[in-house]
Structure formats: structure tokens, C-alpha cells
Image (cartoon, rainbow, N blue to C red):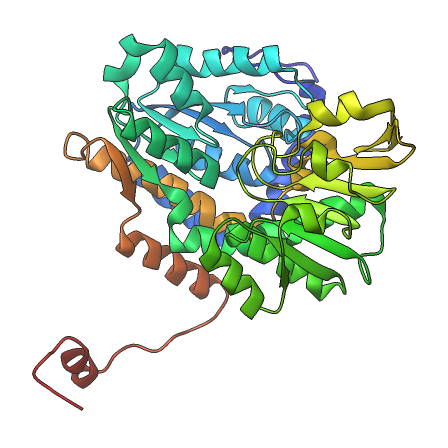
Length: 424
């Protein structure tokens, strides 16, 4: 493919663009809400003159968010939030077909990733769309002079929200942050149904293992853990949940799962899936207890949920046995199988969440950017929820696209539900 572009980018090969465009268009069939936002943004230009740096998984679904931002008038750049989630053909198409600067290479090393983070900040963003808060954290630590440029940030991961709360507690978050992750139309669907399906999709693509009859250990019973446990059970697995939160642990028990500490689960599990957002959830003492051939993977955010450094020191040999599948032969003679290098298995070994569920998540992201612009100067620093009206409008648009209608209150019911004077 021969083309001359008047902006900088860093993608694998622009010749991949035709394939990427075809896949972007296919994903768009399942994203009616974001398509409506794209159309409205094209007419209203709510982001005109706004510089946006987005750090996301560069997939077919994210492409539609990037297109919406551009349609809205934004000067947007996109970088990858995870080295193994980038779809190189999609990155090429966004550059060649849609004129969006992308800096993302599948398998990029840490140095390249950090260089791309710097590129995102060199754009001097007014709004940062973050996936894990790496860009915001780098801005706060290294680019203090740019803080005055920032209208706000949007964050769609549990890990990123935890980091933003810590920043605000430490007094270093000086601008508003939209908590996209906790929007009902995000975490109820993306975290639960999206993670549940795509995690098992990645595991099966990487291993071709039969889940029926296997003991699957799910570490963490937040919305991602709930979805993963539910889908694993649906495929016939015996599911064990590990938790640190007693309320979530009770919920897992009442949902029909066995609950126990990881130290106890380690010796009985065939497959381990971490979805906690924390570090070293599976570590040396757990590897030592595992069965020969036990498989471990992560569907949280960063690759530190599994202590791969300790596992490497325990191993006498590490070899690739399938795509996205490494066998660590321990000095004890046992082996532990790691999927997707400990990174997000649903993106490393598969294609991430289905388009239909990302439709609502990215609708939240696009509308959160619009909200930040409209509320510029009136929002205080710290975390802000997506307005309830926005959440419900996204749900309404999704239902309408699915051809589903719901009831509405009668005038009599409206009076009753909002009154304290009428008793039973």
C-alpha cells in the first residue's frame, strides 16, 4: 500500500489496512449505539478544538470510539494500553483509512510502550481516555507543567479507578476524572458478560482444552470474576472462587461456588484465572502446590497478577508449546503452563470482548468526553460518576436497536412512587 500521510504514526504495516477496514466495518454491525453517537457528533461537533489522547486496547471496537471522537471534531491520537492486545491491521486502517494517528504495535516492548505514552503526552491533551491510568500517572509524576491543559480524564478499568482514587487521596489529582468503569451500562455488561465470554474464548483458542470436568479457580469475585465463574460453570467446569472480601465471598457461596483461600485451591485447580487487579495473586508458594500441568492465566489488567518472576526462578526450562502458551518446567519435575505471557488472555490469545458489549462501554467513553467539555470549569478534581441520565439513555438506545420495548409509569404510578403521603 502506497500512501502519503501528513501526520506521524507508529504501526506495523499500512499494507494491512484493507483487512483492518473490513474487520472494523464488521464490528460496527454490532455497535448501533456508538454509531448513533458518531452520527450526532458529526453534526454537532461537541469536541471541536479539543485535543484527546486515548490509551486503549487497539481493537476493532476501539476503532469505532476513535472514529466517534474524530467525527466530534476532536484532535485525537491513540496508543496501545497493552502490548499484546493491539490488532495491527486495525491500527493500520485507522491511520490509512480514517486519518487517525495511532502509535501501537502488537508485541511492543516496555521501552516502546513508554515511548508511546510520552507521545500521547506530547500531544498536550485536554482530555485523556485511559485504560489503567498509566498516562495520567505519568502526567502527574513527570509532566506537571501540562496539568493546566487538562480538562479531565475518563477511566474504564477497575485497576485504573483504584489508581485514580489513590492519586486523589494523595492530593495529586488536580482535575476531574469520569468513572466510566462504574457506569451501570459498563460494568454490568462489559465486565461481566464481556470478560466472561472473551476470557474463556482466549483460553480455548490458546489450549483447545475441554473445560467440562476441570476444576477452574477464579481469583476475585468482582464483576469480571462473576462473569468468568458463570461462563466456566456453564461449560461444565467445577468452579472454585478465592476472595479477600467477605461480602463477595458470601455472594460466591450463595451463587453456588466453592470458596477457599488460594493456598487451599492451589493443589486442586486445573486452570487458574486471576481477575483481581492486584499483584502476585498467584505466587511461589502456590506454584509449589500445583498439579503437574496446571494452567494459569490473567484476565485482570496488568501482567503482575501472576508472579512470573518467581516462576521463572523456579523453572529449569521455559518453552513455547503452542501459540500464547508457555511451559515452565520446574526443578521439582512438575510443569506449570502460562497463557498469554500472563497478560490479558482474552486479548493476547483472542479478540477481546464482543462488539455488542463494547458498544455500551465506548458509548460511555464518548459521552463522558462530551460531558467533560460541557462542564468545563464546573467540575471539582476527583472521581465523578457518569450521570444517571446518560447511563439510562445508553440503555434505551441499546434496547431500541435490539427491537425491545419496556413499560413506562402511568401518571398515577408516578405520583405514588414519589410520594410519602400515600400508604399501602
